[in-house]
Each structure stands twice: as structure tokens, then as C-alpha cells.
Image 1 (cartoon, one colour):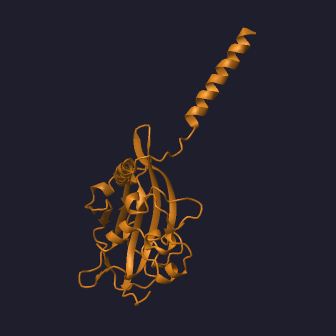
Image 2 (image 1 turned 135 degrees about the horizontal axis):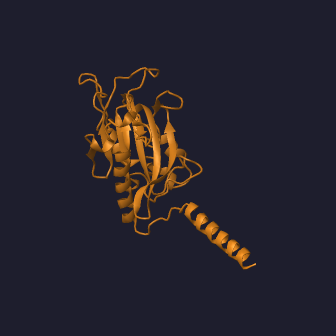
Image 3 (image 1 turned 90 degrees about the vertical axis):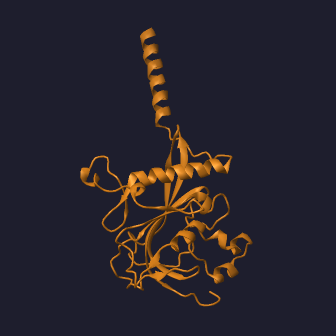
Length: 248
């Protein structure tokens, strides 16, 4: 009888221990937003160390089992620039428009882009800071394969603001991502490539949450989840630009 009780007790303890090990710790928002900002910066650098660009400029994670990517250059080892907002951008070598063809991107230009936009949440888990979850925001590369014109996180039209019924939704900051707007102007647009032209992605923009929406109200790009505290990574090619009509 004692042996049976001992077996039951041992099994119960084992089950409890296994259950505890398998549990995934949920995200806990730091009270101090500067802590979240620090997590973002660390997680972005870790992301840059764990990913590279393939032959078409797509962001790819290094494999732990396949050696074919061993000689690929990490994003962190590529030339990159950090803007005052904390946003980082990488211009992919050999993928930019020719000097005599590149179009300067100005604020409020109409942009046509082949783009993948992904949101990432940074957190500290047992002393390890990294992105713990991701949300797909837009993806024309693996989706429709057709360029996207003026996504609202780049520019929201006046008609949308006018039609909004709440005060916060009448503000550009409710839709537009400051860090992306800031960094995209560092690139040149191609001279209106055909929408069916094969893509050759120009680079990467990595935006910490403080230059996305931070903890402010925002447009529900993903209707099921909030983008509060989420950073964003953009992988893209600007197919063309045009002057925006007055009033748009």
C-alpha cells in the first residue's frame, strides 16, 4: 500500500513538473515604456542576427539543420542606418534603381510597392529578450503577387479621415507608421515598373514600437489582435511613385 501511494505521489509530482515546463509564459507589459523600448531595440538586433536576404531579397531565417545558408550574410553584418526614431533601414546592394532612373520619394507621394509587413512583439523571457509573437499585416509577395498602392500605414487619404466618426480616427497618427514614413524616403522608387514585373526587393525597414503606435490607439490592421507595443518589419520594393493630387 505504501508503495502504491509512493508511485502515485511520484507520478503526481512528475506531472506537475512537466506541466510547469510546458506552460508558455504570457506577455506582461512593462509598466515603464522605456523598458519596452529597450526590449524592442534588443529584439531587433537579435532578429538581424538570425536572418538574411535570399536571392530575391526576401528575409529568411537561418536554418539550424540545413547548411546551405551557412555562407549567407546576416542582416546585422550588412550596412545599415539607424534613424533618430530608432528605426533601422538596410539598402540591399545591387537592388536599387540605376542612378539615372531612380525617383526621389517625397512626403505624401503616391507609392506603389511590392511589400511584406509583419508585426513583432518583443519581451524578456528568463533574461532572454527576443520577439515572442508575430502578426501578418500585409503580404503581396506571397499573396496576390501584385504591388500595393498606398497602404494606410504609409498614407491615409483625407476621405478616410473625413468619414471617421470618432476624434482619434480623424488623426493621421491613428493609421500611419512614423518610422516607416521616415525610412522609406531614404530609398529611391523605380520608374513605374509594370505591376506584373518580377520583384527584386530593395531592402528592409525595422521599426521599434515607439515609432509604430507604441501604446496609442490605432487602426485595427489585424482585427483580432492589438498592435500595442508591437514593432514592425517591412521587406519591400518601390515599383513607382507619383505626385499626389491636391486634396487627396
